[in-house]
Length: 290
Image 1 (cartoon, rainbow, N blue to C red):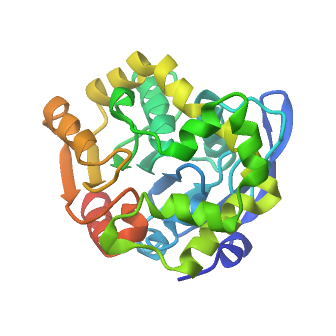
Image 2: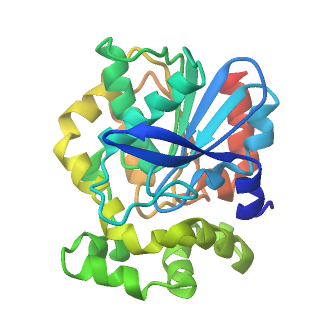
């Protein structure tokens, strides 16, 4: 595997105006041809896509970036983070790179950003065409999302900020391992690289602010579920059934409510298909994206 530091060196931090502030945002691009944009999950970074990067960039012009508050992007300690702002950031980056049409491949936190993007797309409010969207495990149906114990603590207004001062590489690794399937447990070095993406720029101290995306999902549930179910954009799902957060129970709802979509269920994979079964994900992305 590549390291987080190698991933960062291959990209660059650029300054963009996001809302009322200038923010440093990590961006990586590669390849040529049709665009494909990657949205990563909580609490990590765009590094989550490193196993499938070469597959994608061999066929597409790929854009990956770290959401504000994640990875090597700025992580202001006093900021109120939101999914809406992250969708705005995606649009900012598309304008900066001259993207007028792009496929989406999204995971976890990124699924909510994608649902907001689809809502804007179908309302004619997006200056970018989305020809296809590929979803990996995430809380597309908020009522079925099962937060992990650490996430529930982070949501607590008193305990959440305190947890940021207590978390370290060991406790992070223990909590994250629980979201992988028994058959695909990450080793110590893999967990260390993911921890480096979180702890960079003291990001582990703002988890209580980033976790508010769960509230966003509740607040915008009707808009985002409607976008997912009724969009004109073709949807494909690559889903780990053993994910304790958004696993087989979420896939069952997708199959029921979006029967025209293509749903690939991976029986022995947990929350991180692109890390646990990169070969399966790469094969499916080649099939879907060409």
